Length: 356
Ligand code: KG4
Ligand code: ZN
Image (cartoon, rainbow, N blue to C red; front, top):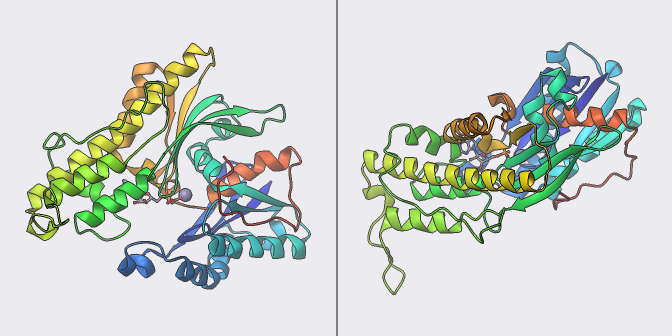
């Protein structure tokens, strides 16, 4: 079964053809990063307009790369929640038009849930649910959350949220940290690159534990600690001691490495807590699934792989191409829904807030 997926929730316009929920035949992505760079973040109105421009060329590229035409497609899937409302509407409207004109089923997909399917792509048994029940960690620019991922009776994956960030998402913290160091948006990959050259023990940044049993995350303390380390403690009138431009390259490397260590440790701490709590509740877990833009982070990838080895659990990390926003994860997850007869009709709405 061939599913065409569309994704337009934030600043990537993406289209993909996926066979049977796992085999990725194409993964076309038009990134808008350059358009938003000068504003230091995603500008919703610019994003919506760029999606309108990029959608058809991206869709055609996905079909060409897969060597198929629209008549070969069995169903249309679209990320319809959560995200920027104007951006989501572009993908949702296009998906409805395609489903209606081709007379094919339409499936609306939760973008956050899809990030956890990204780690299962190109592996038929994993995509069919071999590793469930699993602990899912979503780490992106908009979300940071832990889930128990289980199959329902129809073998559709269902998520139960165990914890979430109470302030910034980890990717957002990365982007703000990068801005403090004078790096361009999106700064996560740039901090990751600088960190490779620094001493991660140069600064002891705080790791939010919250209350003893809490599975929630918080990154605001880490962000403030970095700000003070970069610019010095502010005086009573709010003036800082120095500018980021006064830092040497090696100081920047050390700050990036220490920030990255604290961010990864904050995530790992809550994963460990969640595993302990699930164990106590006699909930078996077969694997740890990770997804979202920050799952590309080198420090997090090595730390979570180590944790998996320590606990004897398989760790599923997305291939680099599926860490960032993409439509393969949307088309892949849609397969289980479709098989269970869970389709949507033309009243499908774009929903900006998260349901999971
Ligand atoms: O999943 P994604 O593409 O979009 C959202 O759904 O939010 O995630 C984007 C986020 C950005 O904050 C970006 O800085 C971060 O992922 N990111 C990284 C890395 N690559 C992307 N953060 C840390 N290290 C990386 N290597
Ligand atoms: Zn995302």
